[in-house]
Image 1 (cartoon, rainbow, N blue to C red):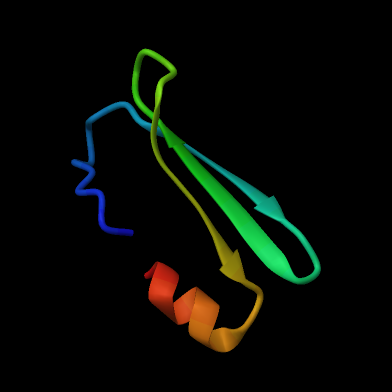
Image 2 (cartoon, one colour):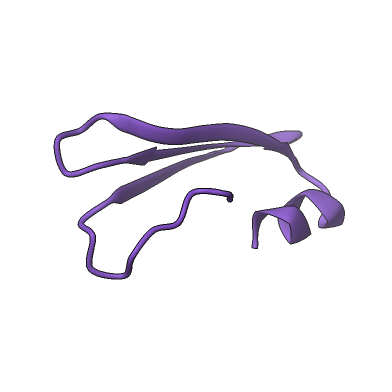
Amino acid sequence: MNTKIEPSSGVTVGTDLGDKKYAICVLNQEGEIIDERTIVHTREGLRRLS
């Protein structure tokens, strides 16, 4: 992810694991979306997530 998240920043990360894609959403402390994306369910997709 391109968003820099500090370890104690209080963000919430949610994932939806599908059979072909992963959906990822990052919320700040106020519940506002600060990043969201979908990646394909492949080795390369998982590598890009890290």
